[in-house]
Amino acid sequence: MPAKLKSDPHLEIAHVLFIDVVGYSKLLVNEQRALIEQLNQIVRKTPQVRKSDAAGKLIRIPAGDGMALVFFQTPEEPVQCAMEIARGLRNHPQIQLRMGVHSGPVDQIKDVNDRTNVAGAGINIAQRVMSCGDAGHILVSKRVADDLAQDRLWQPLLHDLGQVEVKHGAKLGIVNLYSSELGNSQLPQKFAGETTNSDGKSARGTSDADAPEK
Image (tube, rainbow, N blue to C red; front, side):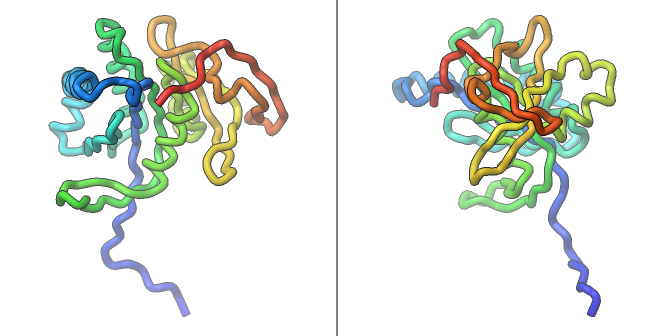
């Protein structure tokens, strides 16, 4: 018997930027509030957020010590936004971020406050990509990097780190995105041990970077 098709499919592909404030939990409550307010202002002023928001193609989700920005048009949107945020942070050295990007399926839902939220692999994996970085890193999943590599603008900024084991033993291909001015070219602490290259071969890296703080 043929499978019955859903009359109201909900899954859609989202392009997610997950942002985490490094060292947030060590701050006093009033310091946390001031920092998040500053970060919100920086994010709201970025051209990409304004453009996507005006088009009605952006969901902003607070995450306690950061946020998720969920775009719905192209995989370039979250990466462009990450670069714009990094540029804005140059005048705010007290704000240390790590950022992760992934494209994947999500389902729009309503949270307990009846606000639009999303659930699904798209946002979950973006958070795991982010968690592989240290302060200043803009990490993207291999899936996103493969799409960006088709553009001459992004290709030189992509630096393959290989695969790393994340939650539940899953393997994720991670790519570090940085330019001469933005991002962090240092090897993430997560990759200081054994990793696997994209060709499946084992590789070992070293890094003097501090372990990620929360």
